[in-house]
Length: 449
Image (cartoon, rainbow, N blue to C red; front, side):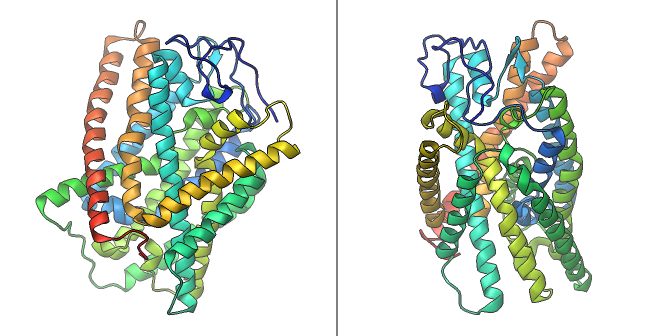
């Protein structure tokens, strides 16, 4: 087990090492202790990880949740604006990996250091809610992919919940075998082949379907109120498609210079990765219009083997993607409960890691099976949590760290971002919860959707 350093001040803010919190301002003298590997990965490796994980099976729902509520004109405008602002917010946050000569490997540590223990816990709550809901979405998506494969070969199929359980067991075994982000390197080759292979196949089959349709309806449907709330939900989904909410945690795995290397990673994400998932979104909407389902492979009318390959690749790529997006939770639990002084694969740590992973996935799976409303969880993810982590918090950090030396125009720009995206966060959160309430009325618990 590796760590970059130990905390000289044992009373600094770090819940993973059970430190006592006395002051609002945390004085970390060295890099925080971690049960996971720090500063070991190349920017090329992390770039490839970002490109593949951002193009996991999640993108199969993007045409429905992004463009159906907005239509062509507003849809493209919002895609471009949110993409640009997401790149800016992540780029800005990456520049604060070191503050006053100290390295921060967790988002919540940055917020706690600058704003006190309350903001530490607020950030912790926002992040971990995001990761928990995100993993639930990955479990649902994996279950949906397995069910679609089964339907190709049989008119009758098991309930969705059985496929959810199978998916969760696979995720659990993978998370146990691959203890941290750096250990994912041996899987990136296969993940890259699967990701680009299934994306190309999706493009080909969807374009063929689109060419065969004489008329496609792109009308945005619903009452005025429905259109407004659905549009806000689409904004949430677009925020989700571009952001992880864990830039400091990803950056912590990079070799020095960590800031420069992270910006190279972000360049790869907001060029290559973005072109792929935006491309699938646009092509899917072009082919099926407002009738595109919340899971794109359901609409594909191509050969059976194509559907099987697409759904198989969706399932397999999700295994790696969900593992990356759940890493901050694994890191927190491992650093808290594993014996950091022992090796990663020591007998005691293996037992503890298995218990921790099993507990986490059991809770996640039960909730996912009970509430299988996949499309609506995307809106919840992109509302308050990611809007805050991506746009609001980085600007708050900028004003705190550079406010005295920054020009008036710079401060005005960041205050504008804070104000505008606070309004967006409030509006999209209301919209997201409205969607969930409607879903609960339309579906019963443990629905076989």
